Image 1 (tube, one colour):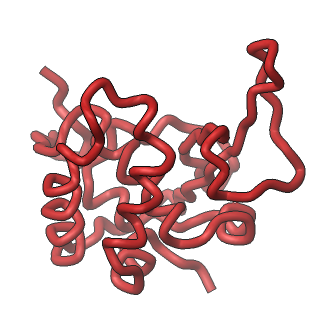
Image 2 (image 1 turned 90 degrees about the vertical axis):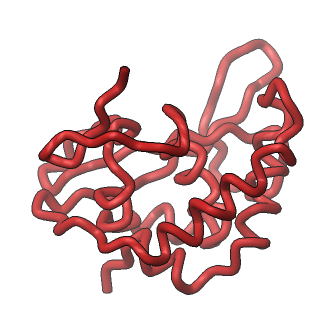
Length: 155
């Protein structure tokens, strides 16, 4: 059965998701990540009430996991502990023709309707999957202006 991001959010407690965000994104933030906790919590509650857009292109969210080998070269480890703070995560989308896309400019409703790819579900827990998606979804901020097709209007 295909699982959407919305389903994961409905079944997962925000505090578990927050632990993952704080763990993996603390070092990349110029301000302490705790300043964002309320924003993420408000967004999480909002996402739980939003109606997902119909996923007409059968878009899947997949997350690649990388590690730095110490020489600024990145590789994908075959096995890893998802809570390892040295991991990097790349979130993107693939459609039914398996073309890869950046989905950073998709509106929240689109994200909610996207399926989670099976490999991603197999290697990462729901709180981690949601955490990496939330960080990607808010790359341009927590407020969204959308065009009629549900993509971000970036000022």
